[in-house]
Length: 305
Image (cartoon, rainbow, N blue to C red; front, side, top):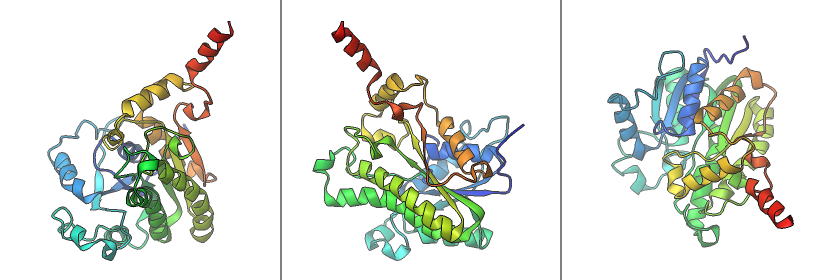
């Protein structure tokens, strides 16, 4: 039987703070394939996340197919807006949610991984990070500060992760990020610079696949997933409408599952995808192929008659 085997591999997933997002679904599938899992969690969410785990509030969602359960080898504080701790403003470093967690920068997490697991501590890095403080604002009304913040946290952070982690990866290392169709098509209401950030993430995937592939021998891909009602996505304000529209118009009118993304990620991050890099892989029931709404043809035929 052909199967994905990640036994002996360690994955670091940046951006897991609950059990409702794609990052968590990817963690479960990688663990199912035998990988050990470390995660990076935004400091303001870290306390709640660890308490949920300690109190077994997520016990059901931690169960793996066929038995066993997802275990996090380490949970590190991570605010990927900052490459090094010195980049964080004083008011952030002294904030009650930050000041006692240690070095929460990208470099800080990398250093902790080296301290815990040696000079080449990871085989897999997943970027599951996105944030735009003005996501409900049309791009035309987005401030410069809001725009740059969206691009910094949602796109440049992937550059920072790859630059920092690629030199300390095991042979055959692989990176993966998560994008969305708004990076190439207009999704009204997906604002605040997030569409720009996703476009940058996809362009960077291609460039970094070449640069880091030649320099470090690693692979870099991104998954363009269909809309999903994660807690973070709910900030958009109309995620339910996005999901319904996608389901109504995709070639496959089935419900998109988080496990669909987890399965695709497990493949792309495994040796089975050794020749795949620099790619945007769509996991959206084929919605990205459509150039007209499914009911548009009916309306056209009705007019023609």
